[in-house]
Image 1 (spheres, rainbow, N blue to C red):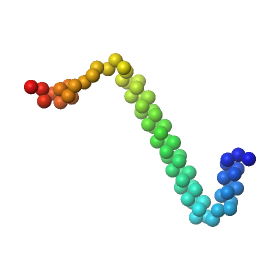
Image 2 (image 1 turned 30 degrees about the vertical axis):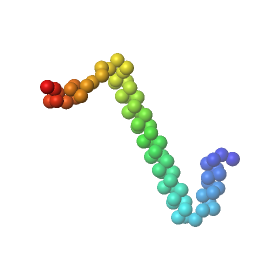
Image 3 (image 1 turned 90 degrees about the horizontal axis):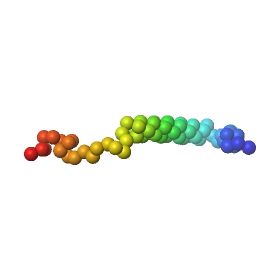
Image 4 (image 1 turned 45 degrees about the vertical axis):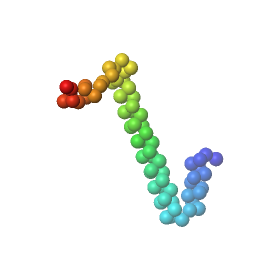
Length: 68
């Protein structure tokens, strides 16, 4: 028996309000998966745009108004 089949069997035995809670949790898990995929995509894009040969920046580079 697959996990889906076992879940269907459990859902049949739950009261409707509990089934709604399971649905809410399943949606939450789906959103977490999408969020992680977006984060991974962003990390990959950042790694592609900036390599190991990037210069080290100083505070003076970031805030030139602080240069004496």
